[in-house]
Length: 115
Image (cartoon, rainbow, N blue to C red):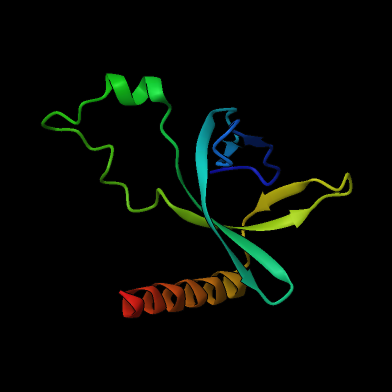
């Protein structure tokens, strides 16, 4: 779905990072950086869909709404630094994906154990 180069937009004041993904057809999708997971010398981001305030106000999740049914909405992206020194979000390799999933699961388990 998304291409490999991702511009980063930061919302003023919230320190919330919004990522704009563009697919092969030029469609833009907005994601919020939920968390950063360091793994060795690399960093991975958990990206979740970001709904604009306007879309949220217009959408009331009436019967038949399927906006929350997609299991593939959140995903991990590897953070790399491009030749201009800017961060980009790229798809991790299968091995990296497995490692970051394991690290995420451990973080979630630790958090649940603390509560």
